[in-house]
Figure 1: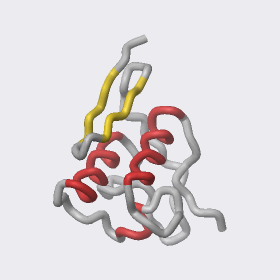
Figure 2 (figure 1 turned 180 degrees about the horizontal axis):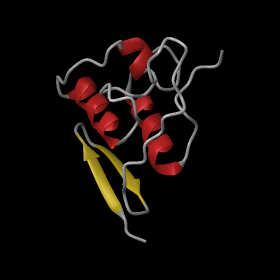
Figure 3 (figure 1 turned 90 degrees about the horizontal axis):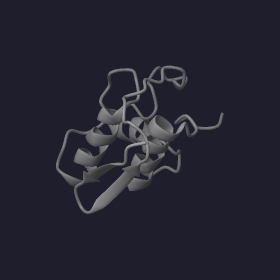
Figure 4 (figure 1 turned 120 degrees about the vertical axis):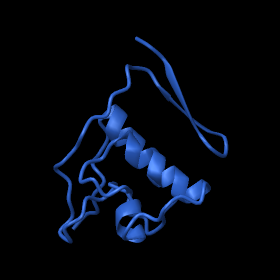
Length: 102
C-alpha cells in the first residue's frame, strides 16, 4: 500500500492509504437534473471536483453552478470545507453519495 498526501491550500492535508485513482460515480443525481458534488459540471464526481471546490472556497476559483445545490454535498445548507471532505470520503473511501434525503 502506498501513502499519498494531498495538500489543498490553507493547510488542509488529506491522507489516502491506497493508490489514488479517479473513480467515477454516476448514480446520484438529484431530481433537478444535476449531480450533487459535481462541482466542475462534467456529470461525474472525481478528484477534479474536490480541487474545483477547494479553488472556489480558498483560491478565487470559478463558482460551482448552482453553488448551493451542487457544492453542498452533505446537504447542510452551507458550501464549505466539510463538503470537500464529504466528496473525498465518497470518491476515495466509498462513503455515502452526495444526495439530500427526499
